[in-house]
Image (tube, rainbow, N blue to C red; front, side, top):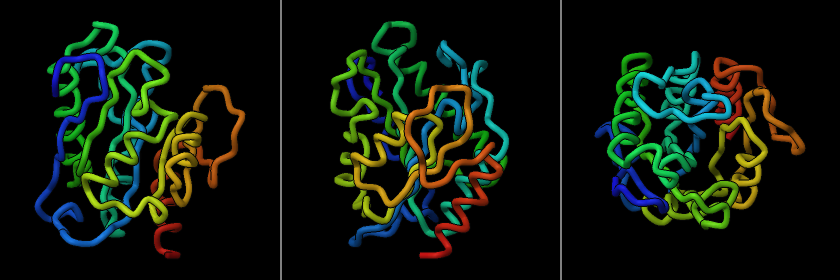
Length: 203
């Protein structure tokens, strides 16, 4: 990842047996927020080292549920800390390496593709709630956004999902302000995994 304060992509991180290996046709995806969804929320601060990263219980099961349903899994995370100079691009990569190792250890499935917007600019088109990371993922990986879902924990994740034209969004409970309603509201990532599996099976 380039060590610059703009939208950055960790690059496709794919398992050869994943849906990412299916060329030539649009496929549905599940987009995941990171802080508060994949890992425990750092509160008002940032995850600035691998030691600060704690996988949230149930997160690996949610990723596995998406993969079991044949969905591409895509991480979309705002990481302003890079733009602020608090963390280098390489430091962010090291955190994501730990994330992938822990997901694989817990459920055998890392996330297929990781996108991180490192801009310190709320108007940047790839900073959530703007849909730029979803639009970019659709271009680069042939994703059918209208058949895809989002799991997040904040209003900005719901706005991101709506702006990208996703099929729906599951919100995991957090202490963050809430003004918008999601398609499903759950208390933890174990419930998110079950809700996601049930909704994807209906399709």
